[in-house]
Length: 231
Image 1 (spheres, rainbow, N blue to C red):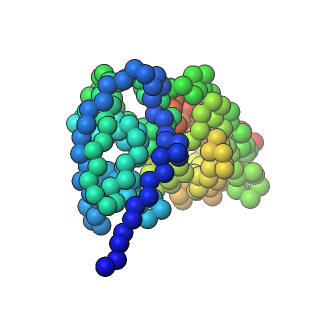
Image 2: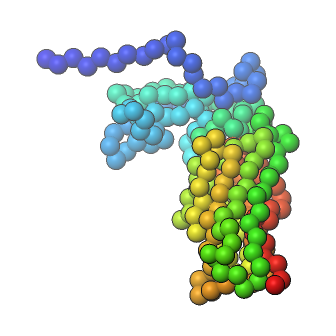
């Protein structure tokens, strides 16, 4: 008979989501074993199904009652999880920023932006002159964060309207978004708006949504990354 053995290394450091580790209240909730097609809150990681620390429980919406304290392996069986219902939690340590509805429901938890209390943006401006064709200009611009990092979702072009607020008066479109290895800079590849052959006088500004920034915070205004001046 084949024997399956699970090894747990308790010397490995665990992710700390608590901003004040000695001040919190957690309750126990069971998560069922994850099986293909029914993984619950677990994500696959290295062939194992893990419920990640910082996951909003039971859903990231108005039904939220807490935040999962540690990583839990539910590959081989059910797990009893500690779910924080009161305390101070580091927003930057969470795998997903709590939604506005979840924040309203989690009124006994304070999400602390320990990183980026003075977060700001530094843009690299791309410029053109009215009537220029794309090949005549530097068709890329970038936006860097100071005191925070972008989340991978910031580069999701398919959901750009959800993740970014974009204001364009220059007949420009963002063709591609790439993130630097340190996740601090988003670079935008620009192209003409659909049906256009040249840019017109105007600007393109971007504002990342709070959900694509590590701290769950953003500024209340757009940042200019492309400017077209009169010829």
